[in-house]
Every structure is written in C-alpha cells, then in structure tokens.
View: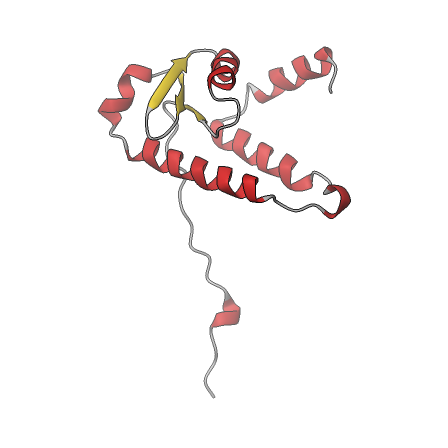
Length: 130
C-alpha cells in the first residue's frame, strides 16, 4: 500500500487531468502492471468488464436532460439504474462498496461524454490483386 503523502501527491497531479486523460492513465497503469505467476484475466474480471461496459452504454444512452440533475456530480449505475450520486467520488465509492461489495457498479462523472469509437483497418486483411 502506498503512503498517504504519496497518495496525496498523486491525487493533486491527477486532479489537473481531463477525464479522458485520467482514463488513459488508468489503462496505462493496468497494462503495465506485471502479471503475477502467469495469471491472465480471470472469468470474473471478464464478467465485470462486460457488465461495466453495459452500464456505461446505458448511461451514455440517457438524454442530456436526464443527466442535468446530476451535473457536477459522480453517479453510481447498477443494473441500469442510478443508485447513488455525490460530489465526492471517494465518498460515493465507499457507500457503493458497502451496499454492493461483490458487484460491478459503474462510477462515472455525470457530464462525461461517450468516448469516440474508432475503426482500425488492418492492412493485413486487404490483398493486392496482380
């Protein structure tokens, strides 16, 4: 576990990042974490990823008018329902973990826009005909 002074420094640095930059930082940290004893993603992790992606799709499908009451806050989405919201993400996280300790619950900033989707075409799939 990291020391409190280190965590405070990290929080101060991360606070300056945009949501997209934060997400990229998290992905980089996760991708660079050493795999221990040959472990890969567990089935539980895959299920959680799928469920969180489903919750995110639900949240992004909501109209802007439905998100207005939560402006400036973080929301917790569970089973296609906003189950809690708060200005403080950490306080929201603590409450969510108390209610649903073993379930994937999406915590997201209410004003976050859906990330753009990109289609990457592989040159290996195209063939040049002589």
